Image 1 (cartoon, rainbow, N blue to C red):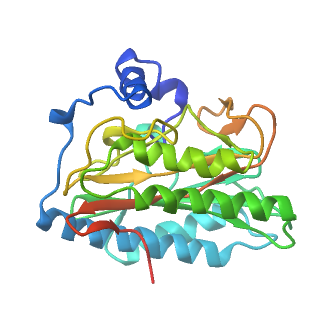
Image 2 (image 1 turned 60 degrees about the vertical axis):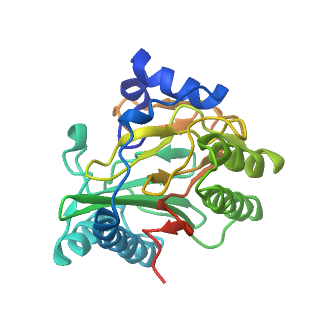
Length: 280
């Protein structure tokens, strides 16, 4: 889940039990998972495109000297000028339209007057609501000159996302999705964050099921057409442990290692996965 500190998201036994079910291949509470109709998925395409477009506009503006608050203004303007609503604003009290997390910050960085510097690893995360449906997407950008090890981390994290998306076909299992992320990341010597996960998405930004970035192949609920998930690998150059800063939002690696984050909103269809937030 995103836009909610781990301490808030996972303190309840209810939330934890969902994640454990994914881990051990337990039975998901499928009755609580909403499958979208073709008409609803069409609406989600609109929201997804706007979220993807916004992410691209923000990414183009990332350069040394730009503040993270500048990026937030771009995100909000892009969403509102195209008929959408910034989903993050006010969500559990979050104060901005965009999350901007730099270097060892994993997710949920709050925009401020902090200036971006050469070599920074900048993760941006945005969601847009259009006609009552949400699109959610994220990416990590390296500000030149990027260190070779940082470039590799970003590349592998994105690869892990697309490996997971390939698993989103009817008949496969939720555990296949998490296992795909974990295999790509850990085979390259990286850590996979456990305490934050992806999620179902639709009329709400966070719906069931929780989508862990680790797991056992062949385990968990079966993926059926109409299921829409936001899959979001969070990968570190060191260990998987994270903590939340005193601002109550920003999640950082405990060991100070760099982190990267990618996310797409994807629908399971009869013909395979459809990425709703991808912009050509």
